[in-house]
Amino acid sequence: MFPRKLTRQVICNPDYPVVQTKAGKLRGVVVEDAFIFRGIRYAEAKRFHMPEPVTPWDGIKDAIMFGPVSMEISTGIAHDAFNVPHFYFPQDEACQYLNVWTQSIDPNAKKPVMVWIHGGGFSSGSSVELYAYDGEELSAFGDVVVVSLNHRLNCIGFLDLSDYGEEYRYSGNVGMADVIAALRWIKENIAQFGGDPDNVTIMGQSGGGMKVASLLQMPSADGLFHKASIQSGISDAPAMTHKEAGAFADKIVAALGLTKETIKEIENIPYFHLARACLTAAGEGGRMPWAPVRDDDFFMGNGVADGFREETKNIPILIGSVLGEMTTNYNVELELTAKSTWSDEKVDGFMKEMYGDKADAVMAAYQKAYPKHPRANALFVDKALRRPTLVYAKARAAAGCAPVYTWLFNLECPAFGGTLPWHNAEEAYMFHNACYLEASYVPGVSEWLQDMMTGSWVRFAYTGCPDHPGIPYWTPTSPDSVPTMIFDREIELAVDHDKELMETLPDQNITKYFANSKRRQSKPLGGGPRQST
Image (cartoon, rainbow, N blue to C red; front, side):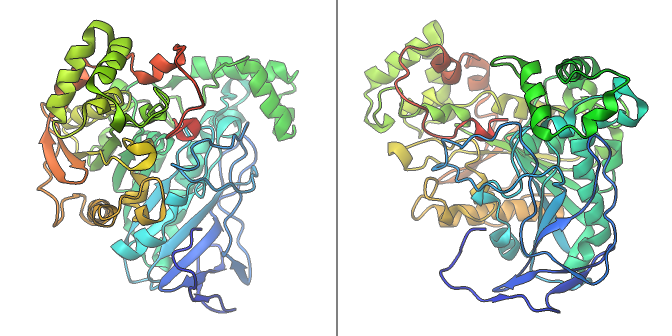
C-alpha cells in the first residue's frame, strides 16, 4: 500500500503462503518478513439485510489485492491530501472485505490481534483510504497480527426501514453488523494467521472511534474483543433514536415513490437512485443522520448517556485525541502567514475577535496548561473532542469499569511554518508509519516518538495496560481526575493539566469563528473535513 523500500523481495507461489480458513484456502504474499493477505471476504449480505457467512469454496483463492470499499453517496477529493494522504479504491455494495498483516502463519503462534476500524463517520471512508492505515510496520514492530476491514456505510449501512416490515428490523444497524461479522470471522480464523482469538484489541479513529464505542454497547459483539482503543472519536451526545432515523427513512422512501406495499423494490433500485433520494431527503446543505440506531436490542445506546453495559465493563480502554484536531484547518488563513511570525499584539487581536471578554481568561488557562507552547497556539486548541474524551474516561471510571488510559498527541509539525497536530495526525505514529508521511514528519523526533507511541499501543494489545519502558508510569483515570499521557517532543504524564482550559474555553472556537467571518481569504489548509466525524 505504501512502499517502504525501492526494492523488496515478494513471494507469492502457487502453494505458499497459503492458509486454511473455515470457508476455504487463501493465498497471500510474503513481503520481506511480513505475510500479507488482502481482500479477504468475511461475509455476504443482501441490501438492508444482516450479513451471513461466506459461501465455502474449493481450491485456493487469491488474497493478494484489496477488496472493494463501501459505496459512498458522494466522494470528494480531500483538500487535506498533503496532511492526510488519501488512497481511493473501487466501490461496491459487496464490500465486506478485510486485510491481514502478520509475522507468522503458525496456528500456534498466538500473537495479539489489533483490529483497525476506519474513520469517515458512518458515511464514508475505507480500510485503505489513508496511507497511515498500512499495517506492515505495526505488525513488524510489535510482532502482532494487524487486521483492517471495510463495511457498509451511509444508506446501505444505516437506513432504518424497520417500520416497513420485520425483515428490515435491523436495517438501521447492518453497517455495524458487518463489523461484528468481521470480528466473528477473526474469532474463527485468525489462529491460522498466527493470531490469538482470545486476545483481540479493536481500534478506531474519528468515526472508527465512534464504532469502537458503539461495539461496547452491542450484545452480539460480546466475547469477540477484549480491549478497545478510541482515537479522536467519542461523543457524549444521545444515540440516534428510531424516531429520528425512521423519519429520515420515510423521506427517502417517499422520494423514491415507494410505499409500505412496494418497499421490497428498494432492495434492487440502482445505488445512484438511492443516493439521489438521500440527497433529496436531506435538502440543500442538510445533514444525513447516519449512525447506529438505538433499539435496546442490537444497540443499547451511548454509554455515557444511556449507561455502560455490565458485559463490557471489564474491557480496558485506551482513549485520546490530538491538540489541534479540526482547528488547525485555519492555521495559515488568519493572515496567510505562518503563526510563528505573529507578534503578541496580533495574537491578542485574534483572541479578542474570537473570544471577546473571555480572551484573557482563555489565554491564561492555555499558558497554565501548556507553558512551553507559543502563545499563538492558544487559538487552535481543540475542545470539541477533548472534552467528551475526558467525560467518557471519568464516566467509565465512576461506573467501576476496567482501567481507562487517556492520552493527548501534541506534536507540532513543521508544515506551514508550524502546525499543531490535526485530525488523523496521530495515526501514523501509532501505526509506526510517521517517517513515511511528509507533513507530520519531524526530523530527529518522529523516529523516537513513533517507537514510544506504537510501543504503547502494542503493550496495550499484549497486556491491557499501555505502560512500557521509555515513558512515565501511566496511571489510569479515576472518577475525580484524569492523568493524561502527553506525546510531544517530550513525553509526560500530566494530571488534570487542561481542566481549567476546558472549563474556560467557549464552544465558539476558531472553527465556528471562521464559518461566519469575513476574514476568510482562501480554502482551508490543514486537516480537512474528509475525516471530520
